[in-house]
Image (cartoon, rainbow, N blue to C red; front, side):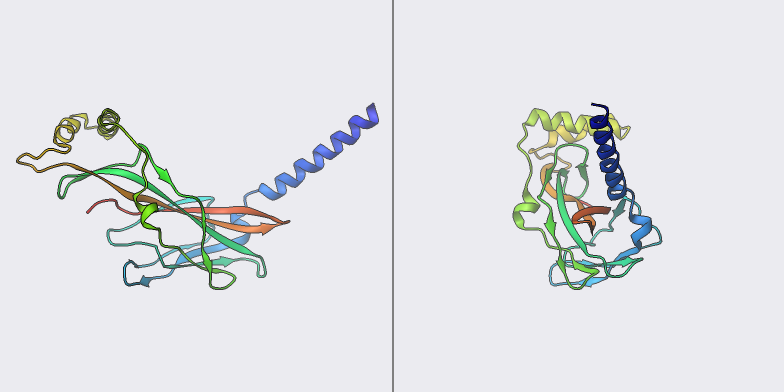
Length: 216
């Protein structure tokens, strides 16, 4: 019985060691930088973005109005040549309220998240970020008016101006001197997951989340 316990303990220790090696933070070891090249397309454009040095496990990148990463090329800067890489992308939508100019983005409420989509590889370290489909851009969970009102109140309270809720809620779907407030759905996060192949398994090195502005 003791020998059996010793064998089990040894196997557990080896399995734990394997997991620690496989799941240990890799970004400092394998990437010295990451960038998205400037891109000018027929529908979307991007001015470019670069992160030099150690790439953290997660990174949020707010985008300027008019910047979209769709169709742009992401380039990795590995510290070691010859490894196999892949990049996958997920879109997240949120609901906003538009008052024909001013808008309220409920990015802390419900979301629709797409499946992970593999970016097309141009070479070993360059990948074209995909363009979301109309379905991915418009997807959003069902909600009731009561849920929407509660979400607006929670959001404005969290922003430190709960009184704003009384300015938005009565105007949803109704016009007055200040205009009609209309709900809209937009992509609020584009997650770009960078993975490296290690011992037959894909290991996440970093997830870069681009945050496009929802309204104008």
